[in-house]
Length: 219
Image 1 (cartoon, one colour):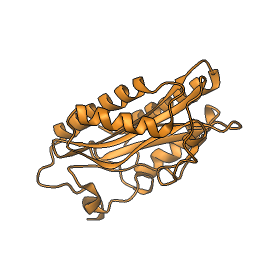
Image 2: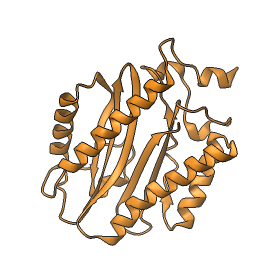
Image 3: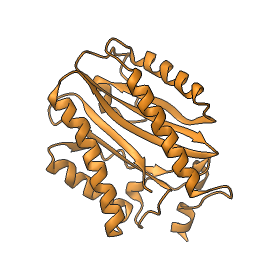
Image 4: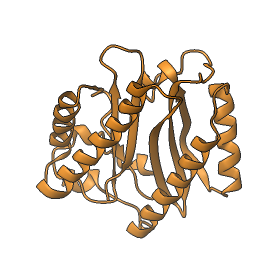
């Protein structure tokens, strides 16, 4: 019964609409990332993101726009950015968006690099690699949510990065998912159903002050 309550959905829930929301949100992430250039302030990137969302006629955002530059890539969702940094010529940033389309919640995030810093590029790629490996583990093993994050920590460590286990994924559905009180994916013992959970991966460089983030719908 607990599992059923944690994976409850509304009467309007349609899996295909979750896929649509996911795809549209990824479109915004990519468009916004392409507009972020060295010299831009973090706050200016947020303003640009709002313009893109308006142009794409989104229904609403369901969580605040999160764009982090440089050292702020180490901060979690609930931690405010430190200051308003300007993107450097060699720098790293991520975009994290939660947007409602067709009454369903999209939630996508990825890390991007400007310039030629090899370790920053490796960090951004590693976040995506760990996500892909954990997503494959979910798809092929029947592992529960907690086991997925145990596996994510193992894979991040094996690749030379630190996984932030304060970031453990969460529910999505037809808006608003928050009424279902599902908790975090990393604390969810059963195997998570498709189309209901966001897998979040946030890693940090072992010695330098930056990290990377990647999230997507398990579908």
